[in-house]
Length: 254
Image 1 (tube, one colour):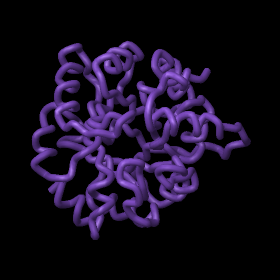
Image 2 (image 1 turned 90 degrees about the vertical axis):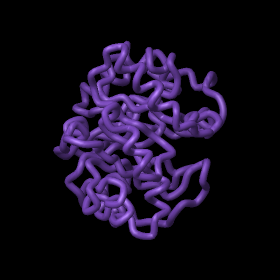
Image 3 (image 1 turned 180 degrees about the vertical axis):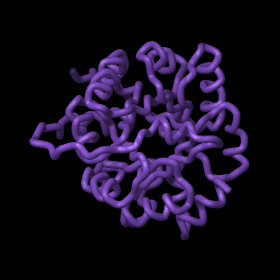
Image 4 (image 1 turned 120 degrees about the vertical axis):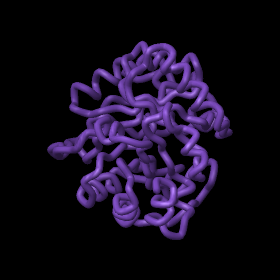
Protein backbone atom coordinates (compact mmCIF):
# COMPACT_ATOMS: atom_id res chain seq x y z
CA UNK A 1 0.00 0.00 0.00
CA UNK A 2 2.28 2.71 -1.32
CA UNK A 3 1.35 5.95 -3.07
CA UNK A 4 2.42 6.65 -6.64
CA UNK A 5 5.38 8.94 -5.95
CA UNK A 6 6.18 9.48 -9.62
CA UNK A 7 3.42 12.12 -9.66
CA UNK A 8 4.92 14.12 -6.75
CA UNK A 9 6.94 17.11 -8.00
CA UNK A 10 9.96 19.03 -6.77
CA UNK A 11 11.88 18.59 -3.54
CA UNK A 12 8.98 16.76 -1.90
CA UNK A 13 9.02 14.08 -4.57
CA UNK A 14 12.80 13.68 -4.38
CA UNK A 15 12.78 13.19 -0.61
CA UNK A 16 9.77 10.87 -0.66
CA UNK A 17 11.19 8.59 -3.36
CA UNK A 18 14.46 8.33 -1.45
CA UNK A 19 12.59 7.42 1.75
CA UNK A 20 10.52 4.81 -0.08
CA UNK A 21 13.68 3.15 -1.40
CA UNK A 22 15.00 2.78 2.15
CA UNK A 23 12.03 1.07 3.81
CA UNK A 24 12.92 -2.49 4.83
CA UNK A 25 10.88 -4.05 7.67
CA UNK A 26 12.77 -5.37 10.68
CA UNK A 27 11.84 -6.51 14.23
CA UNK A 28 10.65 -3.56 16.31
CA UNK A 29 10.75 -2.96 20.06
CA UNK A 30 7.58 -3.13 22.13
CA UNK A 31 5.77 0.23 21.86
CA UNK A 32 5.90 2.33 25.04
CA UNK A 33 2.82 3.96 26.54
CA UNK A 34 2.47 7.51 25.25
CA UNK A 35 0.36 10.60 26.07
CA UNK A 36 -2.37 11.83 23.72
CA UNK A 37 -1.27 14.29 21.04
CA UNK A 38 -4.80 15.55 20.37
CA UNK A 39 -5.69 16.08 24.02
CA UNK A 40 -2.51 18.07 24.64
CA UNK A 41 -3.32 20.42 21.77
CA UNK A 42 -6.89 20.97 22.98
CA UNK A 43 -5.83 22.58 26.23
CA UNK A 44 -6.88 26.26 26.59
CA UNK A 45 -5.00 28.81 24.51
CA UNK A 46 -2.89 28.36 21.39
CA UNK A 47 -0.72 25.26 21.87
CA UNK A 48 2.82 25.19 20.51
CA UNK A 49 4.31 22.09 18.92
CA UNK A 50 8.03 22.87 19.14
CA UNK A 51 10.26 21.17 16.60
CA UNK A 52 13.70 19.59 16.88
CA UNK A 53 15.35 20.15 13.50
CA UNK A 54 19.05 20.34 12.65
CA UNK A 55 18.71 21.30 9.00
CA UNK A 56 16.21 21.60 6.14
CA UNK A 57 16.20 21.83 2.33
CA UNK A 58 15.15 25.49 2.48
CA UNK A 59 17.56 26.64 5.21
CA UNK A 60 20.51 24.27 5.02
CA UNK A 61 22.23 23.74 8.38
CA UNK A 62 20.22 25.46 11.10
CA UNK A 63 21.82 24.24 14.31
CA UNK A 64 23.91 21.37 15.60
CA UNK A 65 21.77 20.33 18.52
CA UNK A 66 21.31 17.47 20.94
CA UNK A 67 17.63 16.58 20.46
CA UNK A 68 17.23 15.66 24.14
CA UNK A 69 18.58 19.01 25.33
CA UNK A 70 16.31 20.80 22.86
CA UNK A 71 13.24 18.83 23.91
CA UNK A 72 13.92 19.44 27.60
CA UNK A 73 14.28 23.17 26.92
CA UNK A 74 10.99 23.14 25.01
CA UNK A 75 9.26 21.32 27.87
CA UNK A 76 10.48 23.94 30.34
CA UNK A 77 9.44 26.71 27.93
CA UNK A 78 5.82 25.62 27.71
CA UNK A 79 5.55 23.41 24.62
CA UNK A 80 2.45 21.20 24.57
CA UNK A 81 4.11 18.70 22.21
CA UNK A 82 7.45 18.15 20.47
CA UNK A 83 8.00 17.40 16.79
CA UNK A 84 11.08 15.30 16.05
CA UNK A 85 12.49 15.09 12.52
CA UNK A 86 13.53 11.54 11.65
CA UNK A 87 14.43 12.06 7.96
CA UNK A 88 18.24 11.67 7.78
CA UNK A 89 19.37 13.09 4.44
CA UNK A 90 17.84 16.55 4.14
CA UNK A 91 16.88 17.16 7.79
CA UNK A 92 19.62 15.34 9.71
CA UNK A 93 17.21 13.39 11.90
CA UNK A 94 16.85 9.76 12.96
CA UNK A 95 14.61 7.32 14.80
CA UNK A 96 17.26 7.27 17.53
CA UNK A 97 16.53 10.97 18.07
CA UNK A 98 12.86 10.08 18.55
CA UNK A 99 13.67 7.25 20.96
CA UNK A 100 16.01 9.39 23.05
CA UNK A 101 13.52 12.26 23.28
CA UNK A 102 10.75 9.82 24.27
CA UNK A 103 12.92 8.60 27.15
CA UNK A 104 13.64 12.17 28.28
CA UNK A 105 10.31 14.02 28.22
CA UNK A 106 6.68 13.26 29.07
CA UNK A 107 5.18 15.38 26.29
CA UNK A 108 3.45 13.89 23.23
CA UNK A 109 5.86 13.45 20.31
CA UNK A 110 5.19 13.82 16.60
CA UNK A 111 7.29 11.76 14.20
CA UNK A 112 8.02 14.29 11.45
CA UNK A 113 8.99 12.42 8.32
CA UNK A 114 7.78 11.58 4.83
CA UNK A 115 5.59 8.56 5.47
CA UNK A 116 5.27 6.56 2.25
CA UNK A 117 4.97 3.00 3.59
CA UNK A 118 2.79 1.58 6.41
CA UNK A 119 5.87 0.18 8.14
CA UNK A 120 6.94 3.75 8.90
CA UNK A 121 3.81 4.05 11.07
CA UNK A 122 4.82 0.92 12.97
CA UNK A 123 8.27 2.44 13.50
CA UNK A 124 6.76 5.69 14.78
CA UNK A 125 4.67 3.85 17.37
CA UNK A 126 7.51 1.52 18.41
CA UNK A 127 9.99 4.36 18.93
CA UNK A 128 7.66 6.41 21.10
CA UNK A 129 5.67 8.78 18.91
CA UNK A 130 2.15 9.71 19.93
CA UNK A 131 1.44 10.83 16.36
CA UNK A 132 2.90 10.66 12.86
CA UNK A 133 2.78 13.19 10.06
CA UNK A 134 0.68 12.17 7.05
CA UNK A 135 1.23 14.49 4.06
CA UNK A 136 -1.74 14.48 1.70
CA UNK A 137 0.44 15.78 -1.15
CA UNK A 138 2.30 12.44 -0.92
CA UNK A 139 -0.45 10.01 0.00
CA UNK A 140 -3.30 11.40 -2.11
CA UNK A 141 -6.33 9.10 -2.09
CA UNK A 142 -4.46 6.66 0.20
CA UNK A 143 -4.62 9.19 3.05
CA UNK A 144 -7.69 7.49 4.52
CA UNK A 145 -6.07 4.05 4.42
CA UNK A 146 -2.94 5.34 6.18
CA UNK A 147 -5.10 7.08 8.77
CA UNK A 148 -6.93 3.81 9.44
CA UNK A 149 -3.64 1.95 9.77
CA UNK A 150 -2.35 4.55 12.23
CA UNK A 151 -5.49 4.16 14.35
CA UNK A 152 -5.14 0.37 14.27
CA UNK A 153 -1.65 0.76 15.73
CA UNK A 154 -2.81 3.16 18.45
CA UNK A 155 -1.06 6.05 16.72
CA UNK A 156 -2.57 9.48 16.15
CA UNK A 157 -1.92 11.44 12.96
CA UNK A 158 -1.33 15.03 11.95
CA UNK A 159 -2.83 15.12 8.46
CA UNK A 160 -1.12 17.92 6.53
CA UNK A 161 -2.58 19.91 3.61
CA UNK A 162 -1.54 22.91 1.52
CA UNK A 163 -4.34 23.26 -1.07
CA UNK A 164 -8.13 23.15 -1.20
CA UNK A 165 -8.08 19.79 -2.98
CA UNK A 166 -5.80 18.33 -0.31
CA UNK A 167 -8.14 19.74 2.34
CA UNK A 168 -11.08 17.93 0.71
CA UNK A 169 -9.14 14.65 0.76
CA UNK A 170 -8.19 15.09 4.42
CA UNK A 171 -11.78 15.85 5.46
CA UNK A 172 -13.13 12.89 3.47
CA UNK A 173 -10.51 10.66 5.11
CA UNK A 174 -11.77 11.62 8.56
CA UNK A 175 -8.78 13.57 9.85
CA UNK A 176 -9.09 14.56 13.50
CA UNK A 177 -5.92 16.67 13.67
CA UNK A 178 -5.50 18.80 10.57
CA UNK A 179 -2.28 20.65 9.80
CA UNK A 180 -2.26 23.48 7.27
CA UNK A 181 1.20 24.15 5.91
CA UNK A 182 2.03 27.65 4.69
CA UNK A 183 4.96 26.14 2.82
CA UNK A 184 4.51 24.65 -0.63
CA UNK A 185 6.60 21.49 -0.22
CA UNK A 186 7.30 21.26 -3.95
CA UNK A 187 8.78 24.77 -4.27
CA UNK A 188 9.53 25.47 -0.55
CA UNK A 189 7.91 28.92 -0.84
CA UNK A 190 5.95 30.23 2.19
CA UNK A 191 2.71 32.22 2.16
CA UNK A 192 1.39 33.06 5.63
CA UNK A 193 -2.09 33.65 4.20
CA UNK A 194 -2.49 29.95 3.35
CA UNK A 195 -3.20 28.64 6.85
CA UNK A 196 -5.87 31.22 7.79
CA UNK A 197 -7.60 30.86 4.41
CA UNK A 198 -7.76 27.07 4.47
CA UNK A 199 -8.44 27.05 8.22
CA UNK A 200 -11.56 29.15 7.76
CA UNK A 201 -12.61 26.92 4.87
CA UNK A 202 -12.14 23.78 6.99
CA UNK A 203 -14.33 25.20 9.76
CA UNK A 204 -16.91 26.33 7.20
CA UNK A 205 -17.07 22.77 5.91
CA UNK A 206 -17.77 21.46 9.37
CA UNK A 207 -14.35 20.38 10.60
CA UNK A 208 -14.60 20.25 14.37
CA UNK A 209 -11.23 18.68 15.16
CA UNK A 210 -7.83 20.13 16.05
CA UNK A 211 -6.51 22.74 13.62
CA UNK A 212 -2.73 23.28 13.43
CA UNK A 213 -0.93 26.08 11.55
CA UNK A 214 2.53 25.20 10.20
CA UNK A 215 5.62 26.95 8.81
CA UNK A 216 6.92 30.50 8.79
CA UNK A 217 6.01 31.69 12.28
CA UNK A 218 8.58 33.58 14.33
CA UNK A 219 6.82 36.46 16.14
CA UNK A 220 4.24 36.67 18.89
CA UNK A 221 2.04 38.98 16.79
CA UNK A 222 1.79 36.27 14.11
CA UNK A 223 0.57 33.77 16.70
CA UNK A 224 -1.99 36.24 18.07
CA UNK A 225 -3.55 36.35 14.60
CA UNK A 226 -4.15 32.58 14.78
CA UNK A 227 -6.06 32.63 18.07
CA UNK A 228 -9.74 31.85 17.85
CA UNK A 229 -9.33 29.82 14.65
CA UNK A 230 -6.41 27.50 15.32
CA UNK A 231 -5.81 25.23 18.29
CA UNK A 232 -2.07 24.90 17.77
CA UNK A 233 0.93 26.08 15.81
CA UNK A 234 4.04 24.12 14.82
CA UNK A 235 7.27 26.13 15.08
CA UNK A 236 10.70 24.86 14.11
CA UNK A 237 13.26 26.99 12.34
CA UNK A 238 12.76 30.25 14.26
CA UNK A 239 13.11 28.44 17.59
CA UNK A 240 16.11 26.44 16.43
CA UNK A 241 17.88 29.67 15.44
CA UNK A 242 17.40 31.23 18.89
CA UNK A 243 20.41 31.19 21.25
CA UNK A 244 18.19 30.13 24.17
CA UNK A 245 15.42 27.69 23.15
CA UNK A 246 13.53 27.89 26.44
CA UNK A 247 13.55 31.69 26.53
CA UNK A 248 12.55 31.98 22.87
CA UNK A 249 9.56 29.69 23.40
CA UNK A 250 8.52 31.46 26.60
CA UNK A 251 8.55 34.77 24.73
CA UNK A 252 6.20 33.34 22.08
CA UNK A 253 3.73 31.68 24.45
CA UNK A 254 3.90 34.13 27.37
